[in-house]
Image 1 (cartoon, helix red, strand yellow):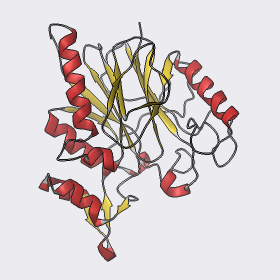
Image 2 (cartoon, rainbow, N blue to C red):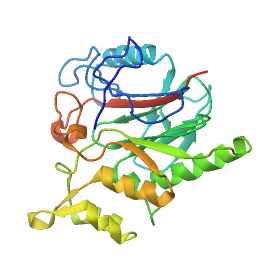
Image 3 (tube, one colour):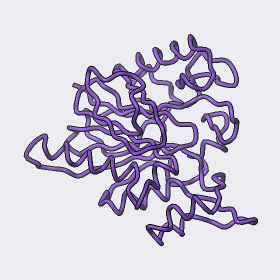
Image 4 (tube, rainbow, N blue to C red):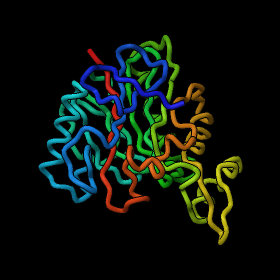
Length: 270
């Protein structure tokens, strides 16, 4: 069930707050279309600076977003790859990566989406936070090594180096994305997943003409479970999470072609 509740009075009640057992010092949020200044078709809180919106409006929206978070969001140049970037105070905006992580308070790992799947991670001790961008290409990767596998490997490596491990359990939250009732793909997409994992075939429903309906959050849940992530929350593939069908709430490139971008952020408080 998708639960929405504000974590602070200034956060629009329409935004999504993950319902997961993150520690008290870890905060996370997913924007919706609400709360910004952009005009149609980017109305109103478009946070993407690469989609044709008025740059002044995007700048205003990003300022609104940062002030609402009370943390500094770092926006990436996402390329549907598998590069993972560690964020620090000197990290530049638009650095090329499709996942980012940090142990620094006040820096918000941020992913922009308009149909792709955002995935957040943290440890139960709250020492590290992570955000990943999982479109189908990045999720599939090469040889079962996609963005989630690379993110998990980097996350574990840094967290284990950080301290003598007391509690390394990792939890994950999946945000809104194109749903399994709307994500029509060709046979090459199914083949990219099934080639390395026969169980992935369960996440594709056949359509006439050799097409398939793909369950993107279901594929991500399979990948996370294979990595040993036992606690996975958020998007379960139900209609309320679908960016395409929930047009008044979410941006969708598949639906609109010209579209704004949502932001999903996770950060540590001091």
